[in-house]
Image (cartoon, rainbow, N blue to C red; front, side):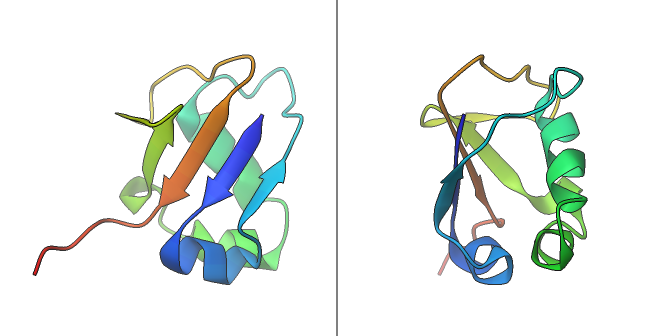
Length: 83
């Protein structure tokens, strides 16, 4: 699975994207965010409040209860503000 990070999520994690193999028990977006949070300090800082993280799977916005695809792209980004 390809993970892509945007804005301050990318800055805190320290990378733009990465390919990962998630454990079998990681089945939903919420599971993924919790699993990532345990991968190190940068991830923990970026995902300190996972409920505010927006997620898109294969370019479609999804909620945190959405099941992860076997393969594909998952994008994580902070809430958007208008101006």
